[in-house]
Amino acid sequence: MSRRVPRRGGGEANVALIGYAFMGKAHSNAYRQVNPFFAPTLRPRMKVICGRTPSAVRAAAREYGWDEAATDWQEVVARKDIDIVDVSTPGDSHMEIAIAAARAGKAVFCEKPLANTVRDAERMLAAVEKAGVVHMICHNYRRAPAVMLARQLIAEGQLGTIRHYRGTYLQDWIVDPAFPRVWRLVKSSAGSGSLGDILSHTMDLSRYLVGEPVEVNGLLKTFITERPLPDDPAKKGAVDVDDAALSLVRYDNGAVGYLEGTRFATGRKNYNRFEINGAKGSIVWDLEQLNELQLYVEEGPNSGFRTISVTDAKHPYVGAWWPSGHIIGYEHSFTHTVYDFLRAIGEQKLPSPSFEDGYKNQRVLDAIERSAQDGKWVKIG
Ligand SMILES: NC(=O)c1ccc[n+]([C@@H]2O[C@H](COP(=O)([O-])OP(=O)(O)OC[C@H]3O[C@@H](n4cnc5c(N)ncnc54)[C@H](O)[C@@H]3O)[C@@H](O)[C@H]2O)c1
Figure 1 (cartoon, rainbow, N blue to C red):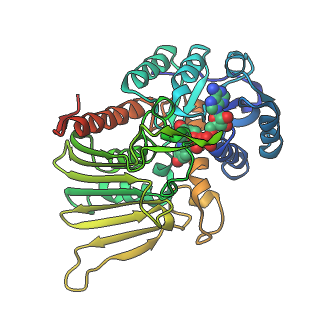
Figure 2: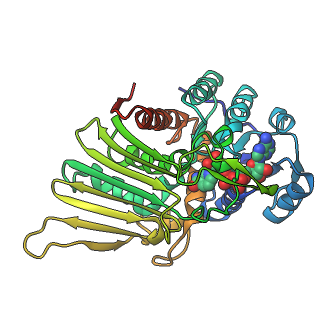
Figure 3: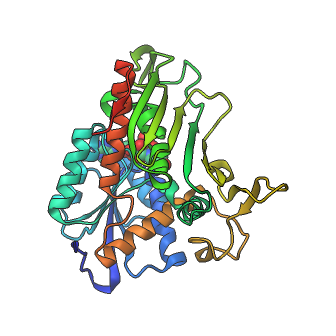
């Protein structure tokens, strides 16, 4: 299916970014870096950044390099001179912004998890499909060169039949009970806790590398049920999302998975790791050692894990950056994702992961939640 393509002169697409904090900064950096390093046919112009607090959004526009600052996303999304809308706000506003953008004919780039509920995710998918616009969800870890190499090795059959996916995403930023009840700890704004925030990435990686989940068993746990309110620390508010999310998974191809996402792994900062075991070999990747892939293949008596430095110009995206071996980092995964989004717009194709991936992932997360409530295995659709 061909998709609507921005038709601005000079191969430029005007971007509107909604949200200017953590992801706002990460995405701004990606739009800034993609032109000089990847020279995309369709170049993003950083037209307008939008948030709710005028002084803060003006400062962000200055610091990150946007032409304009705005405070009303509805106005921004309706502008005729905007081609791409980037949704980098908390989950409770993804649906409204993405649907409005699709209806206005914009290509839509949205942060994960796609929405706070399966129903909202389904509506978002329907809206972008109906409008015929290009859409992508920002599961940026798919774009780490070592993860892409892992996918290639699996596709080539080097690991043989895949049996196990073991994915952990461990952080510790809310171990302290005095840490405030920020939006990520409130269901109405975040949808869920570790489940949607970090286990969503781990699940997406398993869908990318292993197969489609068909049945799950979930366990959710909230360790600290009340926290100081950010604006009034003397008062406490309820935490109604999970602090830790665990799941057993059956995949469509017979593989089995164990996934764990927690913000209570004391000492772990952003330990996003997977280990995949096949009949002939295994691979291990860990975000904190982003440029390395550990590979084990059965090679006789001296076989053992070896570390591949995924920093050669022949590896995905690496040649666009620095000479071989000059390593890249976290932020580069966003530039790669944005580059593929721009390419897809230019070629009128759907990039991967699309909103359909976001929707499918959301269905699995929802099944984990239901399983955790009922204490039973839950089949996916
Ligand atoms: N891909 C990743 O690895 C990754 C990492 C972190 C966060 N995220 C996702 O990115 C999204 C944003 O998270 P974050 O960490 O940047 O949060 P954040 O709290 O740092 O920033 C949220 C931003 O959204 C703005 N905002 C909130 N409601 C708004 C509204 N109604 N209109 C305009 N602006 C609004 C806030 O002012 C702020 O600028 C979430 O969906 C989150 O899950 C993804």
